[in-house]
Image (cartoon, rainbow, N blue to C red; front, side):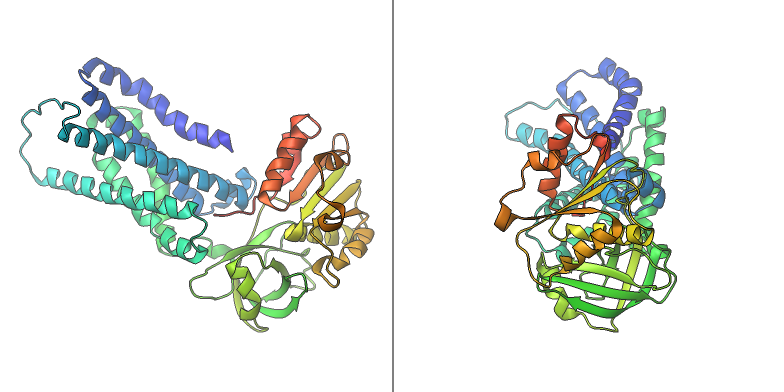
Length: 438
């Protein structure tokens, strides 16, 4: 995850250092000259980061596969968005703060030379300055809103739709104000080239075309409510479904105004003969708590996907699966797939952790599923057994094996560090679902 960020920062910085900085160093006489150079540099960096973030938001299949799934693509999109916000804030402060300090008398600003006469070109430049200023304010507000979890998702989603317009405004601002010296070297042309796919992605977003080719209409055929606050929704696509692998998820729009599509794991292996899709939804937030009462058999839904790289592929040796709560859903699909093919060909152990056992709950069928799939089940109830320590998990990891985790994000982060720190598990062999799109 760090490598794309390093490349995204390193390439424009390297080009700036090679083709712009020598001229700046030779011509700069005061700190104000360096300030102007840094304003232009941060503006260029912001364009690179914003364009890449906008492109990722379009969910291009090639990048999704290269990054290991939509969850990882969105995580990178989030980090790039935060980075772009920091760069834009720095760009704004370099522009705004020295002027205010000079006006207040804290620093001295060099005397300006005569300004060239205005014309049509200067009008477009002034417009670019004004547009860029307001686009910067809106971008910073969007970043803050994205990070404040108390703001409901539906408001975040609608406000986030402003970003394509903000980005297009930022492109106009950046390219119009880019000096001739940038265009005389590769930095200017490469910046324009990097901005182009972002502009195309912004156009697709504004036209509502992102993900359209991967959508299919469906209807709810059954709803099963379990006493452990899990609701299983069974849907039958009315159009073609490309099939999915166990562990993948889809974006599901149940048709509720303002909510849009939410990501849910496909809780079952794909069976073309049956032709249904299952989603196990746990009441964990405002939307999912209200959802069971807003669903009905026969209701139309829109399903987009499948997405995700948590598919148990490439795991040849022993596997340890760790599931927390509703994180059991991708493993249910894999258990069904293994049972259909006659059982696991390598040793597989499943550690399933919940607070307490609820009779008649969603996971009641786990023992029979594990037996049919040839998977060893270890059930851990924290209310009865206490906290599951790292040592207990480490002891179940087989040499040369892989670990597959789906559960609370904080626990996943901790386990990744604990199991890879001593070399027991290679970082590439620790797989987890990053199911946090905001």
